[in-house]
Length: 89
Image (cartoon, rainbow, N blue to C red; front, top):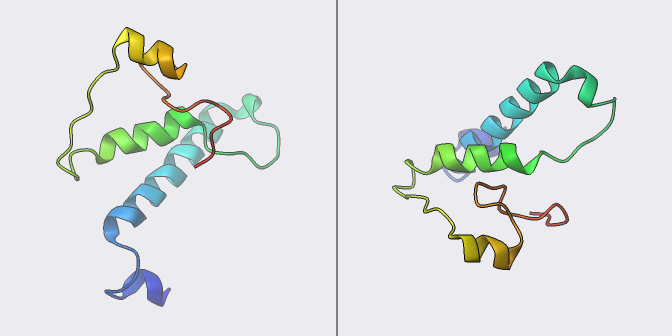
């Protein structure tokens, strides 16, 4: 807990991303109860990318949209998620 509370711990931005991921995961499990049997899961990429989009303003960043040729080249939908299922962070 010292790492979370002292000035040399994780930056608040990192912690807010982590907490947002956890919150969205809990909402997903609650609203789609029958879809997830008891087990351990990796956070779905669409939720991880939702958190990333929400954090863009904090970083003063803007997300551009993929062109059709770019999406085809990397093999993902234009609207995301932008990483393939086998990609692990």
